[in-house]
Every structure is written in structure tokens, then in C-alpha cells.
Length: 155
Image (cartoon, rainbow, N blue to C red; front, side, top):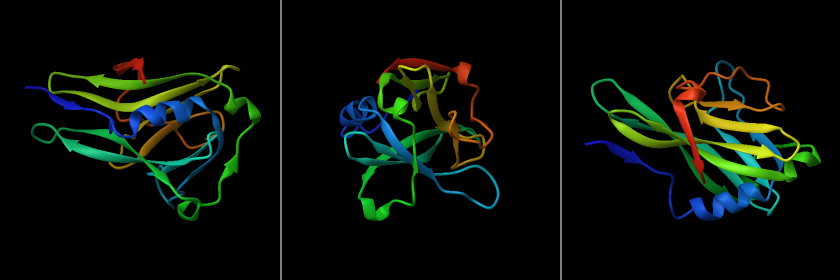
């Protein structure tokens, strides 16, 4: 029987609306070595969302990462970098879903702006890390699975 791993349904509907409102700033934790494990997004609706990775055991040594989302207070956020105004005009937000013999997992998301910029966030190749692909993010993009392995679905 396949494992079904979904985003937290309590937050997901309002999260999709928040992401569609646009982004005004972001921050990541900056480790001395390796990719970030946390991403903070300041939404244009006034909320700040913390994005982390959760790991799920499949079979044997296999595991899959999924994202967790938490709305956080301004006191719990590091210094954020402002984003250009074009990030406030979001055209589409999609889930990235991984489907294998062992699981169907909502693993990440892609946010597309009207100007053509994209933010893709998925679990990284190293456990408990994020792979973030965006014009404003300079770290190497090393996802757990190639982006072509994910199916894009409505958020």
C-alpha cells in the first residue's frame, strides 16, 4: 500500500491564498557548510511563513522529504531581504508531487510571477535541507529528486 503524504490541510488552503498574494521579503538560515534547512517568506498579506523539511521513512533505507509550513510572529524571524515589487504579482502557485511505487508525496511548490520569475522549493539532496531555486537565491540547487520527477498540481 502506498504512503500518501499531504501538506497540512489546516494551513494549506490559506497558505495557497497567502502565496498568491505575493512575496515581499525572504530569509534563509545560513549554515557554515551545506544548504539551508529553513526558509522564511514574508507574504504580501502580512503573514510570515516558515518553511522546513520533514523526513518520512518508506521501506528499507528509503525516505522522502516533504515541506512543513508554519505562520510565525515577527519576533521569530531573522533579518529578511526585501524582494523586488515584481514578486508581489503572482500568476500561479503549484504543488510539486512525487509519485513512486511506495508513495505519493506533496513535496514542494513552485510560485510563478507575472514577470516570469519562479521560486521552486523542495527538499534537498541532504536530509533536512531545502533546495531553493530562485533568481534571488545564490546557493546551488540540489533537490532530493530532479525537478522533472515531480508532477505539478493545483495548490
